[in-house]
Image (tube, rainbow, N blue to C red):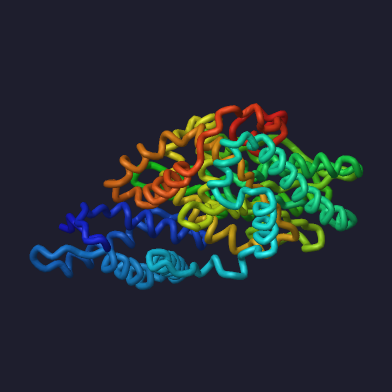
Length: 443
């Protein structure tokens, strides 16, 4: 019986076969499969091979187990799943070595947008966290708020101008981007500007196309990986989109998040004159989601927190950390999801972003920068006190390495700025209100 496993850092931890099954299932989902029975059979093969190889008190290594997973997948004929597993494994090798990702290449980086953001930050004295701290100490923080909001408004105006140039052919607007980038508020504001020309959005909630929760891989803590596009019923989405753009009336399913199942209908919908189908989705740029729609009928907008603010170590604040803080505050306030749950789940979010969202950035007609430099002191007021506890909680938890790294980094970020407590300075139509509450918009 295999009872222990040797990790890469030299620690010996209990062997858990469920980790193998979960990893195999995740790889299978990436290529369209989700058969747990088959994943368990692969696990059986791996365990059997480990037992056959065991000699005396020898302890298998993580690398040995992963090699055997690849072997078992290939021998059982699961070539596509094996390939997905190998790619995912290699991505982790690159990450540990501090090397570039296979998916996040230089071609994915919006250099022009980053230059605009950096230039703006230099002009407005917020290119460094210490400058943001100085704006608070010197009584200039409210002016920084106004400047940040105006920058975001300019981003929106440019995006809408590009959309207007294509309104004669566009029948579907896709607003995509990673979690908590501000897609919902951006969508509302874009529609406000279009209404002056007689156009309006007809939103379709892609969340209603989730597959039943039982079909999503579940980790050892009972958390589900529902961040991938394969968590959605892609064929049904395509069928529905095509029918709507043909002018037909469709029945939209209803997903009950309490039961984790699709149950009945959320209503009928049809596009009328001057109406544009709106797809506000994490995975709106995933090709398979709209492959049946002619290119000239689609307009793609991508939104991201393109932060260009440096920390004390001269490294830039990470975009994903900004979004994690937004999601943490929103989850805690509106979704009955604890901050600890949010940061533990974030590795699912980030992995899906790097695999399915970031690589599609180049497909967007326009990119909107939703980062607001003034939000960091406000987020510190909301959740800053939690991060010391996170560091202590996750330090010895072998299953929370990603959460531990993020907690350490964000704790250091917060140490460089004071908290800002007066949220009245945040406009009621600000994108930040999507996360902290108090917006004039209904979400």
